[in-house]
Image (cartoon, rainbow, N blue to C red; front, side, top):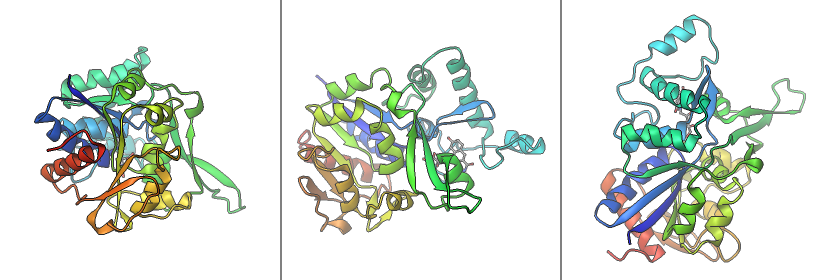
Length: 325
Ligand code: FO1
C-alpha cells in the first residue's frame, strides 16, 4: 500500500516545502495530503479570499509569482486600479486580475452551498497540484490580532490578521492572536481520516503562531495528531534566530517565545510531554538547539530550490523512520 504523508502547512513556506514533498513522493509510492491554514482567509469586496490555500495551489500548479510570494505570475492590476478609482475600500489589499477569477469561482460555489473543501477540490481540478489540498476547516476560523487601540487611551482593539500584516505591515505591537470561530469549528471533510491513516505527519516550516496554531486550534485536529500512530516531525521556520521569511519573529514575541529553532521546537513540545513532536529538523547553523523529549537533527534547511527541499524532506522522513534512502 502507498505510504501516506500528511503535511500541516501555511502559505508560502508551506508551499515551497510541499514542492519538496511532492518531488520526493514522485520517486516513491506515496500519497500526500496537505492540511492548510484558513486563519488568513478574509472576505473583501464581496469575495472570499484564501491566501494560504491559493499560495499552495498556485505554487504546486506552476502559476504562482514566486518573487512576490503570493498571487499569480504574470499578474495585471486593472481591477485594483478601477476599485481605487471608485474609492472602494480596502485599498490596502491588492487583488490581481487573474487572482480575482479564483475568488469569483470560490465565492460563487460557497454561496451555492459547497463547503470550502469541495471548492478547493474544484479549483485544484484546474491546477493539478499533485497533492491533495484540504482546508483545516470548512467553517470560518479567522485569525485576529489584538493590538493597542488607536485612541491611545490604553485599551485594546482586535483587527483581522490581513489588516495587521498588509495594512500596517505588522508594525503594531501584537499583544495576542485570537482564532475567531475556532472553538465551534469542525475539521474539514477528510482531515481527520487523513490524520488517522497517515504513516507520517510533517509540520512544514510555516509560521507556528499564525499558520500552524490556527490549524491545531480546530477541535479534534491537535488530538488526532498527538494521539495518532504516525510519527510527527517538524521543520524549523527559524534559521539562526530569524524567520526565513515573514513575520514569525513578531508573532513569537507576542507569545514571549524566543525566536529560535529551539524556541519554536519547545513551543510545539514533545509528544511524550503532551506536545506535538517526535522529531525536529533544524538548520546546521542551529546544531546546538535542544528540545527536551524531541530528537533534534541539524540539516541544511534553506529551500533554495526543489532539489535542496527534497533533500530536506528525505531527512525529515528518515528521522521519522519511514524512509531509508
Ligand atoms: N500581501 C501583501 O503584502 N499585500 C497585498 O496586497 C496582498 C494581497 C493578497 C491577495 C490575495 C492573496 O491570496 C494574498 C495576498 N497577500 C498580500 C498575501 C497575504 O496577505 C499574506 O502574505 C499571507 O496571508 C500570509 O501568509
